[in-house]
View 1 (cartoon, one colour):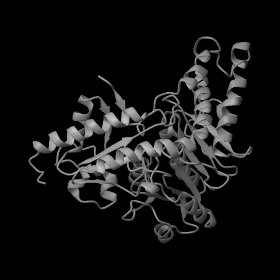
View 2: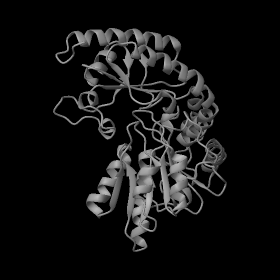
View 3: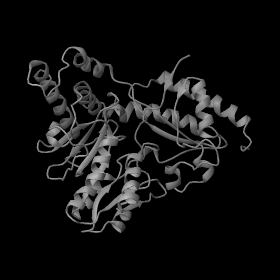
Length: 390
């Protein structure tokens, strides 16, 4: 059976060029980079090249830091918990502002600090279009009180793009630190940190055709940075632990290639996404979440009336198409998807979301086949649905 992968917001295939660049560092140049002998020191040039590629890809200045870590979850925890620890060390109360639609690595970390450490956390709502607004931020940010603002650049489920530039500019004008989770933005949208004055930005390699298990945290010069992990002197004492050289090398090249393919994403990948989206909208009683002009060019979150999201996924999977559900629920008794709830959508719609996310390796033939499978699946599941009537 032909397999069609339309779940690239979850993870992406590793670019063959990235794998090729990583291979020598598993069995040939495998030394610990902290070692003084040749096995260790011969890895240093490749590490420097990887960092140079990362700095260039996001427009980081020489004086800024890019810390290599295990994943964006680690980076997000580092920023959020670091803000709390910095405030505590200074004897100040900690007030964090985030949003209701963040990734769990932000939401659950904030909830932990709120419940276990007494931190005040404000969760900004989204408007009817699913976006965080500057007006909402202005309403809740208090100069001299707010410690950190954390707003994701692009949402992992809807693909909707928040106005991070104006949010960051306002936050900075109030003397408050700004963080953005750019995991779903980088590689799909231009990310230039000379233009967006964020203090902290998190990335994850496996979202842009790099390996799973490595990420990066950008820290602007002069922004405070309390390590999450203590131990050795790696990463300038800002993240202890032996550096994963092959994965660092892979991430560096993947970032360079992703930045080079931004135009392709916003033309060819967008065209294929729109072709799939138009086909879905031709089906009766379907809707797409969010204006396609303000979504990442690879993402569709669709709702099919009368079809549970997980039932849809099961049928798609049997027919070789991989997608994901916008809802983690498996029955009506479980809570509907948090992003849908934040957008104040009808509860029935909250259980029927299916996300399709393309990559630069998605082909036209795959989209054509996926459309055929989706059409058959909708027809079959609606024919046996007890809740659907046309």
